[in-house]
Length: 157
Image (cartoon, rainbow, N blue to C red; front, side, top):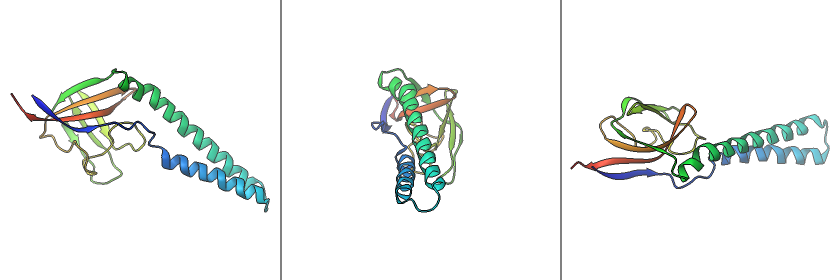
């Protein structure tokens, strides 16, 4: 069989830019208010603390993703399955998840921060029906399978 690549993850940058930016903004606003020393110091200190804690959690999440999912993929420690999606459940909104199995492996698309493919069929993602034969390259970590490459059969021999 001949395959055509529909999705190939080349970007391993964190998908946490906006949350980190907002948390950093929280810290900066807290520092500015605290430096002006208007009223109580409790509010600005709380903003700084919350923003700092959020930044730390987001950075720890990225380091964990990098170590447990991205690094294994880059080192060739991944799995490949082929087949038709089975029990395809898709969302009809931008905030939902798609669920399907290929060769007994469960895949869930739609998590915004997870590495790899997260674009659902509703969002124009490459896996959009049970009618196509796919080859998926993925890394398993915990209960999740992270998709890094999607190919579709274009010609059967």
